[in-house]
Image (cartoon, rainbow, N blue to C red; front, side, top):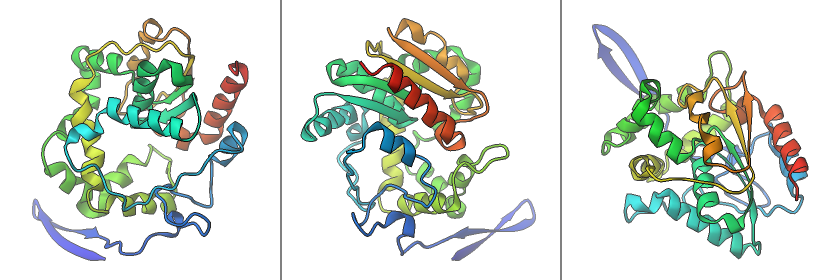
Length: 284
């Protein structure tokens, strides 16, 4: 553990940065080796995975895998959606059920819009439709305030330093609710290890840098879509649900009143139940 003395307004305080040379146990698996997925003893998603597809292929992604280095355009949502399309075909499928949260959910929006013929169902957790988000940034003072961090992320190099400050204190803050730890300490340590790898912080920030200014298009979806929304999200206002019925032809919205941005972590059993019920009633 490396410590740094900081003097602010006459008061002394210490910031700490933990050097993570050893991969945490939650990123190791005796069967598949090293991977990026944080596998802990509390596998809250396990029941859902077993029920959705018992033969779901496991694709390990190494934490040290190279991040796209050419330009931030490698992180454009439409390009990532195209990569996902290729992956689905390589696995031998002609269509898929998409489930995504936050940026994963935004990729789902793009995929369903661009490749409806390959989209069987769409399930999105606290991720705004790009059209709705673009309009809200222009019209809603509250959403602009909630999204200030996204504009900060557009600045070169400084956000990377900020993310690392005081042993990734920003990660600790963003994974906590008002009175609930959404993630276990084991999960958070796995996330911090991943974020400490070369290029990872810039890669994660490039999603914001490549896409925030490119959402001014009409993102319509014709495939059946379930939106699960934690209503206490301090980053994404519930106003982002308004007007979705004009863009999505077959839409169901499930509001989780006692959950925030990390709805699938904070209320994992309820989210699993909502997803399974939706798939069972929309299986055709």
